[in-house]
Image (cartoon, rainbow, N blue to C red):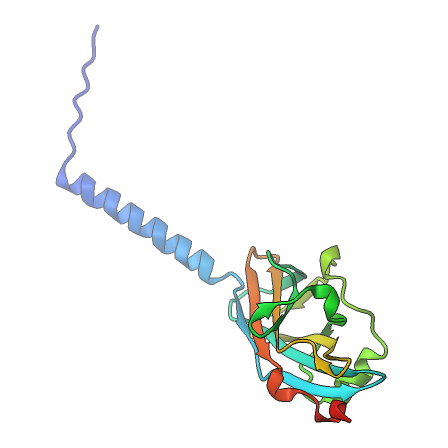
Length: 198
């Protein structure tokens, strides 16, 4: 006995298939809208000259992460970018990193008062960006996590200015798969410390 199956696709089958695709897309979008989603923010950069044994410059770069989604998201870690974390330039040319003695910190919170920042730095070590240090900071829906990227650098040597600009590059990873970049160039030549001309 032999059976023959004849396939015919009608207009109703096409509409059914189209409705199925639309339903699947709507379900996927609904699922994604319930995930956590981090929106990167920032603020006013603090550039402050100060003097210890040498003339220095302090940079405080605020960063913030707002969870605009419906699930909590964990900030896993700050990590190196594909370029050096700090680059100094003089007359629009990159100078060797060893010529500028600097330290790099990441502090929790948004610091805008230079005296408070310098006090905080007395009790913390440099941030080990190259170690991929795990943080595990939980950011709940509609909450904001704030931090400050801080650089202190000697900017005066033998009565000469070492650099005009500082470029900073840092990435941050979240457990939901997001990876955000921070790229910033700061002009410090307008903040050259007059106190170093003494």
